[in-house]
Structure formats: C-alpha cells, structure tokens
Amino acid sequence: MLNLLKLFVYNIWVHLNFFLIIICSLFIKRRSDKVIFTSSPIINIKYWSEALKEININSMTLVSHYFDNINKKNDFDKYFFEFLPFKNHSSFYDKIFSITPVWIYIIKNAKCVVIPFHGIIFKKNTYYLEIFLCRIFNIKTILIPYGSDSYMYSRIKDPILQHVMLSDYPNAALEEKMIERKVFAWSRLADCVIGGINGIDGMPRWDVLTPSHLSINTKLYTPKDISEYSTNNGINGYVKIFHTPNHKTIKGSEYILNSINELIDEGLKIELIIVQNQKNDELMKSLKDGDILISQIIGSGYALSGIEGMTLGLPVIGNLSHPIYTRVFRYYSFLNECPILSSPYEDLKSNIKLLVENPELRKELGQLGRKYVEKYHSYKAAQYMFTNIFKKLEGEDIDLMNLYHPLKSDYVKLNYIKTPLINNKYDG
Image (cartoon, rainbow, N blue to C red; front, side, top):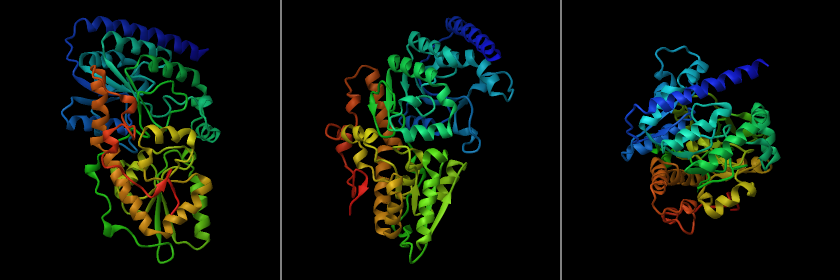
C-alpha cells in the first residue's frame, strides 16, 4: 500500500512538472543545435559525443550520476544535480527536483537526443510524457539499448541466456511489463533505433543493424608492436589470459575458470588474471601485458571488453556461435569480418588450448582485431554511423537498413577484413 501511495504521489508530481515545463518553454529562446547523449552514465556515450565533437558537431553528455569505481566525474559533461541550488547527495532527490530544469535545458538546446529505452528522467509509467515533449518540440530521438532498459526476459530466444540474466539481474523480470511498454512506445515513435546482437531479443524494430554500436578512442591506445607478442606456447613459458567480467554469470566466468584449471592440470603453463571494478584507463594499461582476452562465453555477441582487447591487439575469445542471434549480422552487417574466436562452453577448452599453443595465430588474430576496431568501433566509425543517421533525419535518401550490408555498402567493401576464421571458428 505504501508503494502504491508513493507511486501515486510521484505521478502527480511528474504531471505538475510536465505542465510547468510547457509553461516555462513559452519564455525561453531555443537554440536547438546540440546532440545530447543522455541519461545513463554508460561510458560509450562519452565516446560517441567525443567522436562527434571531432567533426565539429555540437555534442554533449547529460547524465544522472556516474559509477566512481570505474569512471571519473569528468568523463561526462553535465549532471542532473548541477541544475539544483544545492546537492543533497541523494539520487532520488536529484531525479525528483531536477525534472523541470533538466527538461528546460533539453528543450532550449537539443536538436536531437540519443537515449536508452527507459527515457531521460521521467520514470515508471510517466515515460509517455517524455515522448510527447520530444514530439511537440521537434526534438529528434535516436534510441540505443544497453541492456536493462530493453531486455524482456520472456522474449529471450536462448533459455541459457535467460537463466544467466535471471541469476545476475532477477529484479528486471518483475519489471518486464513496464519495460515492454517503454520499448514498444519508443520503437513506434522514435526517429531511429539502432540494433545490435546484445539486446535484439524482443525488439520490434531497428533502422541500423550492427553487431555492436560501441566505440572507443583508438588514438589513445597503441596496439602491441610485433616484438611485443609473446612466443610462449604454454610449454616453453607462461601464456597470460585476461578476463574482465562485470557480470560473472552472464559472462560465464565459472566455466572459463574451470576450463583453464583443467588445462593447467594437463600441464599447460597458463596465468589467469581476472580484473573487476577497475577504471577504464587503468584497465587498458593492464590488458596490454596480456596474451589472450576471454570476454564472454554465454551471451552472444561482444561488448566493450572485447573491443578493448582488440584495440590493444589481443586475440579475443567470445561467443558468436548461436545462429539465431548471429546469422542476420553475417548476411546484413559486418560480423564476418570480426576476428573474435567463437567459443561457447563446449568449445572453450579446445580453443583456449589452440591459442595458448599457437603464438603466431594469437598475433594474427590480435593484429586483425585492431584493424577491425579501427574500421568499425573507432571514432571515425561512430562518425560514419551518426552522420548518416543525421542525414536521414534531415530528409536525405539514406538507406540505413543497408548501411553495413556486405554486398551494398561501400564502407564495408573498402578494405574488407579477411580472417582465418569461418563463422568465427578456426578450421586451420
């Protein structure tokens, strides 16, 4: 009963703020020249925004908070609490009292917002008010899912993935109906939706199809030099394997540990290093000393961990073997160029052994990984994706659905990356 009362009071408060926003908007002069990435403090919104700034697009990040165990405060441009006269150190306070000033700022400045499916600052069942505000003020909307904003557990096609999601994030199952309403409402009215392997389950729509929309500043990180690749093969010396899980069950960490322990018991010299809750710049310094990165072996696709490993020139082991998730990205996007060695649990031990015992293959896949990131996950790649989206939103005849089609896209065909893998499996 108390929760229902809180929800009732919150709804009244949000609707009052909505009308206050409308009234205040009558007295502000709109510039409407910014691309605003908001509202969850995902590090990639920083990277996307920086990429657009490089080509003189007025861009910024506006977030609710930041995770001080992995990020720094200056990773993001502006915070909700900065609109308030004093800081209460309460995220609830920030979100409640910054609703009107945050939205006035957006109305004054934004020509486009890039947001997850949970929206910006209106929560629970008031999300439709934000959709309405974007529409009446002609603010373009680009929707990019990141995980908990869009996953509807009952719609996940792989029961194993559903199981690990329930293990690591059980509460999201209780919110599925609300998540479903938001996903379908935003999908219906958004100007553009970007779809990737992670999160494709249950999505009613996408306009751009990419295995991963994540980006990284490749200029900050020098890949391994040829001389820095170890010639150790597990017999003549140790091979160092990194694993950097943020969600251990989803990544399959226990199975990774088990496979490596079995190989060690069989006599291979392997050093496993598991890194968690380390700031991004510190993590990249640590990773460069590794020989192999294992990103994830349960969920399909790859995320920032795999991209970071490839950026540094490490061979990466992941899971790209589930055709119900990957096949569309092989036909209509650039997944066939990806040099990640696919290893669901059934193949994990043999693939770890393959890379441990073959330093030349490690070097080849590592160097191809860097090329892949430069082509598809660098700032230049983000600029290609977003500028094409902006052109489409401004009325140009851009075929976003085939932006990465391997037979139609000049961007994909140029400097096509040929790997020794077939469907991300090694048959050498």
